Length: 124
Image (cartoon, rainbow, N blue to C red):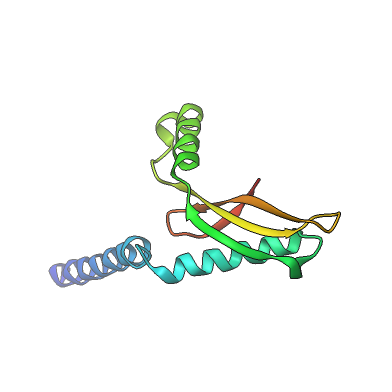
């Protein structure tokens, strides 16, 4: 009876472990839907902060490796061994929009994300 119980609990533990690994690592890797939803969420947040959201014109959206690496170094200095490499990524969104004077300006905003491309915030 004990062997059967241990066997069943082992199978349940293995299934839960495989499920956890799939959900947290495999399902979100290189999923273009996540990148598209990050871009949409970022544009939505930027438009909320603009004086004239209807003037928003998309230019580009790309991973910024230099800012990501710089922030990695800063976090490692502050947190030491607690920080895991690759936890935070920065994407740069360039856009055009009207300023307070009605002139079109080109602006850049950094979007802070985690490894799964969840929106964490905007940085100028």
